Image 1 (cartoon, rainbow, N blue to C red):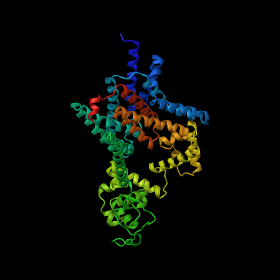
Image 2: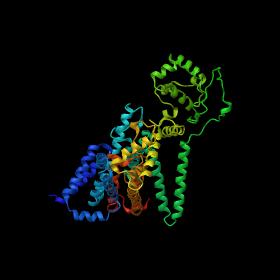
Image 3: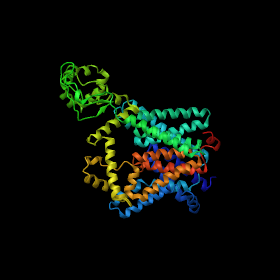
Image 4: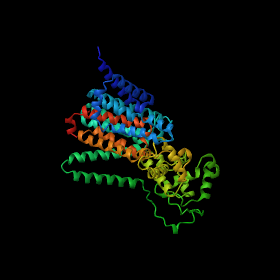
Amino acid sequence: MLSKQSIHAQIHFVSLLGVAVGLPLNKIVLSISGLLMALNWIIEANFVEKLKQLKSQKTGLMLTALFLVLALSLLYSENTQYGLNDLRIKLPLLLFPVVILSSKALSSEKYSAVLHAFIATVILVTAINFINYQVGIYQHDSREMSLFGSHIRLSLMVTFSFFFALYAAWTKRNWWSVLYYACAIWLLFYAYKSEVLTGYFGLVITAVALIFWGLIHQFKKHKKTAFIAASLLAFLVCFIFYRAVYPIPQEAISKENLSEKTSLGGTYQHDTSSIILENGYYIHYFICHEELDSMLQLKTGKSIALLNQEHQDFFPTLIRYMSSLGLRKDAEGFAQLTDADLNNIFNGIPSVVYAEGGVKSRLARITMELQKHLEGADPNGSTIQQRIEYWRTGWDLIKKHPVFGVGVGDVQDAFNQQYELNQTRLFEENRLHSHQQFVTICISVGIIGLLIFLTNILLTIQIAFRLQSILLYLFVIIITFSYFFEDTLETQVGVSLAAFFLSFLLKQEQEKPFFEEKNKASL
């Protein structure tokens, strides 16, 4: 007959499995599993022993401290209802650290089961998403290839699962490693096809962080050498990214000697005030409207004016697409377009690079948005431009309330007021939070909350190095990276993902590490 203690331990294990499965799959499963975990912890009692466990887990409890600071900020928040709702979303910051860190660590087998349940669910979800994409549901935007939740949060899970699979394959070194490598290849393929920017950069940054890990362990007695090598590596990655994103003209054009006539005698229009490039070619140079109109009449029987009515932004799409091919926007250039090119144009694809998809396509989109920002274009509908507007507004709020912030309840109201003061061009529905977790925390509870948050991150990294736990290190790097570009802790799945794995890995890697010491030594 099972003892009361064994029953509670089994329920705790089942609830951990439920959270691991619910994170990528279903919010309801996630919520029920979290509630079960909390109720089981309360009914189990034995609070004296649990308190002893918590005393040795000060780093993990800093997430709970952040939650308490946020709760205290309600005392000076005017919008209490908004604040309470925000705290409800952030309850995992209280639940997971307290319950997991005060409970006994799982056995190695059960620890492995929780991690593998998470990875298996991520693979299942990505497979279903991809199949749905292939049959046409998400053909117009692969970033929406996520049936079960946010594509951004899923990209973080895919990144962690990918590196976990690689690490497991490397350390197992038996027939299981083949399966792990296959899983890693699939996850890498999915990350590529999903075109989620956070996923791309997350993979690159985590790979760089792993190389840094290797350098530190390789040069334990030469820390300066390791630091210099890691710094050079980081500089190289930044340089490669700069070259990938910064628009570099592929054609040398003198504004003073632009051709006035086409080869057929038509007149070119040149907007020399615009420097926007598409795939390295100037968009607003060498445009002959009359010849393009005539060619479209011959090809489709419709004028540009009529096509603009039937297909939104048809003409801008046409000249952008032709520019991406390095063609002049005249009859001769139009004649070189293939049926596939015309099909792309009529489907609203403005560049041959976009049609190719993948990493290059996403980088091309970033490049275009940055160019538009520099020209002062309308930020609405542009991911990059809107984020720049969010960050600028958030920084203005931090300067006004640096010490205690505005309070967790008044964050959105403060943003709304600042948007009005800044006379933003953002539509009301686009006036969101900062999309930068550090900024959001600083606005909410000031420098005090930010210091708690940063201290938790730094100490967790330090513990990962001390324990030689690559799993803990990987997750901290991935989730911290997300903080720079997303309000990760402002959504149920995001805050649950961070709080659960930071607590779970911290607890397990200290008491029941996933990989044996002899395996770690081989890395």
